[in-house]
Image (tube, rainbow, N blue to C red; front, side, top):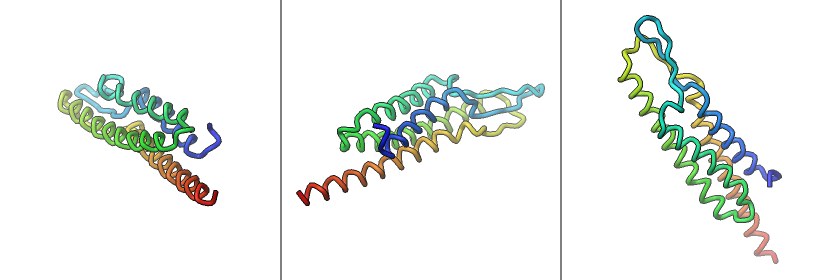
Length: 141
């Protein structure tokens, strides 16, 4: 099951989605030079969608016998990653509005949903290539 490249991409997407839940995505300096970090665990919606994306990637790995379903779920994973990115930006803007910030910057953990989306895209393209190969071999039989 991990012999195919799409399984590797899906495993990497799952790992990145689960790691995303534990890393700070925004660091801000508030009044009094107090540094505050915003973690995805502080927002239930952000945390839940991140875990759901990771579980979806894991589920796709074990559907290796059903390539069309695996491809559909990978496309759903791409869309869920886009939703995760949008919710991340929305939650950070709410965090900025709730706190009077002197200075704030995105942390590198905020890039992980983009990496998850890229992994899903690479897995979907590998699945599409596999499906074309199987269909072409079926014509030869």
